Image 1 (cartoon, helix red, strand yellow):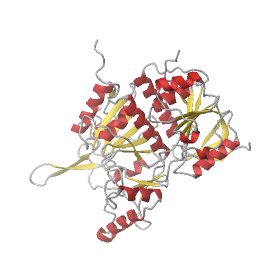
Image 2 (cartoon, rainbow over the protein chains, first blue to last red):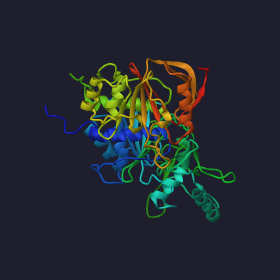
Image 3 (cartoon, one colour):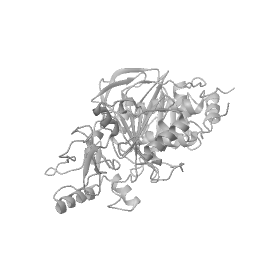
Image 4 (cartoon, helix red, strand yellow):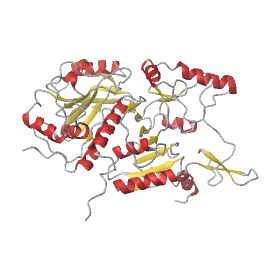
Length: 278
Length: 196
């Protein structure tokens, strides 16, 4: 018998304790970006190192893990992270949303409604919603402390003045529990309503930016808008070309050099379930 | 001789953390702590699981007089390597029993408005839970949750209501009973149900 080559879930115990402390404070202060000492991971920044560190810190051997990238279980990022945890934590994996106890995601929330028994871990590239409006960390920190979010409303107003509507379509800012404005990661705004009052615990990890934040279960998450320009999600004239649903977020796929296009579900598991293929 | 702590550190700490995290995410919900851990009395194994899961050389710990026992001190130094401090105001984790809480919760580390996460976590050893003392609402709670702790009176819950009023700064509280855990973070609003 060989000794196991890795500590359970790759990270050493001191790292997990540090991340676990940050997760608890993030849960206690919903929407606040808690700093943590992000580690180098055996994958580059931008591949979900924040999400991987959060998942590694919450995982138990009894968990069933699902990993999605833009809604799909079979893309490179999802496959490599899933294999990483099979190798280092020995956990069971699944592609079926309802079978998973921990779901790590890049840029989507599954179409199948989540339950109290599930944890959703988001990979986050830029955790600070105010970063493109105010590049200085010292300033954005003060703005959060003072609850000074006027600049974000100005940005959304400028969208309306220029385009006639709020043109932000992903990473759409929202307010958590009537306090912190947060970036829900680059999920399409189609998914924002799923954040609100979700029975599952939602954790967000940004590896390069070294931040962890959380939305506890049943927490009010309100997408920013105006009385005369209320928040709206994307709608399509098409239905999914594979399963026929009109309820899910659709990807537009270019089929040839002549402009033929096809619209299909971004959530591959939901699409397969609707088709009755599983 | 020092008690052994977790049976298998990586696995049992993962089990313990899941329970602590779910308790913090669902304030007032009482959860069974399944982790295999031993601790020297009067430190409860449930409180010890919190200590060994979260505390290390980076987290100053304060022990209340009832827990400031030589065997417990040695246990925490050996398993967690945590520095023990003389004043609760200097601690990141405070371990106390319901009978000898630090006098003023408002004097514990509250964090700052820039960094509200730099705040203390108070772990209180209790005999058990009895709903009906307070009604909790806020993030993590669907509607409202009736909650109460054996041995903690109206004065404590008044202090907790003041703690919530300071949000986003403030402390977070974990209640450790034999075999069970519950938590009330600063985000939870508290309404008194009985005059105590």
